[in-house]
Image (tube, rainbow, N blue to C red; front, side):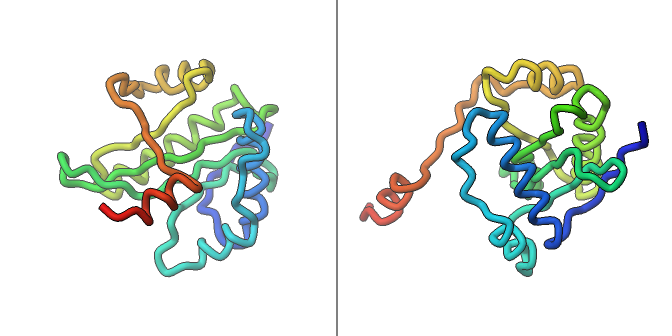
Length: 162
């Protein structure tokens, strides 16, 4: 098997990123949840300050995985961080080190940028991912619960008078 290479995605990669996002959504049992399009991703990647960055893992010129992330900020540490929104490796490539290679690449960026942390969420049922992250030394934040406003609930909340 040839070695995996990691590179920063560009707007021309938006179709590939969308394909990988869709594959992740199917794996996470929500194939109909993806609203992003290749066009919206490409457009956002061209912004002066894109809302996300993406690393692609490639083998023989084919994307076999991706890590999509953005800058966060820790008020307690007084330093930026990286929020890893998605890490995904195609099923046939799992267990071969692609995920670890991608995650370490994001970790290197966090260190190079002086970040205080690298964070991500994992679905409770995704035991293979939980074992993977724990084996690499990541710690679960058991005392924290993620909350979210989205869709109509966000619109109603944002439009309401205080």
